[in-house]
Length: 500
Image (cartoon, rainbow, N blue to C red; front, top):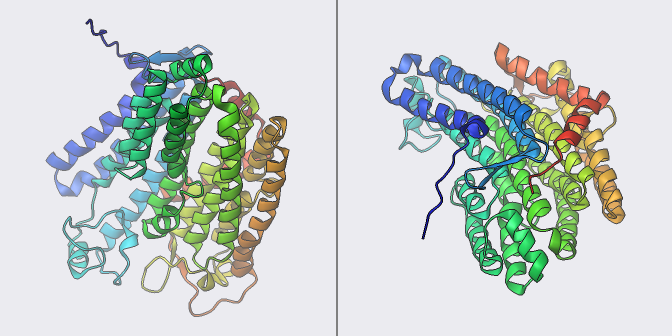
């Protein structure tokens, strides 16, 4: 038996290698640099690495042919959708690092105790064995023991997300998924699905699976394998009925991390889902499409209806993200080039609006300095802080799909593609769900601007200059993509060509 000599195309993989290399360097910084200079070094290293990786994506995209190229014995696909999604992830990563750095530095500079139960104010407890919100943690805060190792951890997770949409075989998909979900139970479903598909098709390469299914048809083993494979992917994107983790995680996690998760994980997971559906499963089109129809309808309905009853802004945004998964799935269901490009556009537009919205939420504090996301307490917030109120309202209107925002163009694009693909009833349901969703977004705006402030109305903490610029960029992208969307739509159309 002759083993093939592995060929590693370092140039094609350089964006991912840069991110992983920066993560390793960040760990070494934690080990060898004194505490007083770790913060600045980690932030500079992370931002510099992300910018370098983004430049790498641009350079690679100029050298890759239209059909794309495979790397590492076919395990990784470097094509235009991969590079488009990797670029989006890197931009989201830059914003996330800025917001996480802002909060960490604020905690280090103040060195004051916070109220019990405020564990959501930092990305990690400042002492490894301390219970969040405990006396031990507050004592560590007084000593200025804020964590900086969160930056290499964030880079490491971002690197895993970049691998996910580029995986061209199920073995590397499974490896990325296991890391990506941090050992969540859905990895077991994913791995079992991979095993069954391998048994049915005798290959792990996605193009090979497509050819085998086209030649021999969809056996029961293959169909069960696809179903289990889909569970792992749909769990990560947060589709119903695999969405139950989203509200609690979004509410309990530190808000900058929540914004990063809400945007980046969807980009990565939908990138993988698009590759599996469009590359490996065309022969099973008649089998998987009705299932995704059902899941999309349930996701839009459950996300929208449940969000109406929420009294916490972060939980409302969590269920809103569930509803958006349903909208994005309509682009996947279209199963045509227009659906692929519309989904890519939607992921970019949604990412910037989401990161910006959670960044605003992180600035809203009560008298004790603790984040206050209770909706009833936001009465009059827009009157006290008009700029913050207007910007948050802009993000909410984008989520609702109001014209002149990126959300309107995003929904229009995926609904148009779905209608062209024969999913007109799904489009009608999506439009109805969007109309219902507008209610709970407008409710927040009315509370902020048209309700008198009370003693419980929180204050807005002034962010540093980098965070102000990042929030302004998110707001600008949300408006510009609503008024002048064509350049990004053209770029998405240009990128809509998966390696087969």
